[in-house]
Image: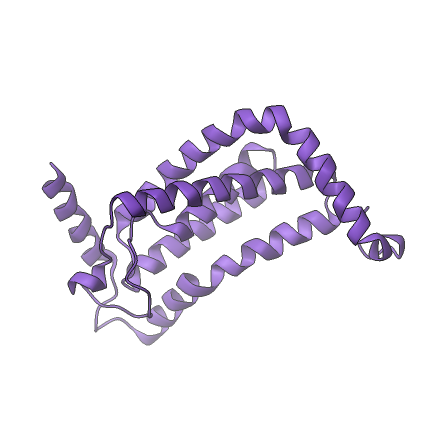
Length: 201
């Protein structure tokens, strides 16, 4: 059974992976989405924290906790089952440099899915959908440039669902105090910008 799924995974990878005949603009776009879209997430989180309301700040904090939990789970999976990336076994074409770490699951997809799912479920549906769509674009791009398999992306989604299930009950119990403590620290550190009206109290 494992051999079947591994064969299917590699076959799907070769379907989406960029070839030597791929156009320059397609390769360039894939490289951009594979390497740089992730930087939009901290910008969004910071913007919502500085100018968002109390509820939005709580959602941002919760999404970060889901991301961290997901990445911990992802790291444990990588330690227990080191799955080689496509370029390590000479499969397909590689368009960006990457360390030969375990491919499964994708950390990029874990982060995008954790942020997008949390925002969507907590009421910021538009932003959640944007993050999920960007995650799909990044997933395609990282397969295209040869550093991930399709099943790495599916695995990341499963990891996030488990991470959310872990965080949700803890957030229901400790979320309010976590937000209150974070906001007190924020208002202490950003007292001057707040007083000048540059950011929201």
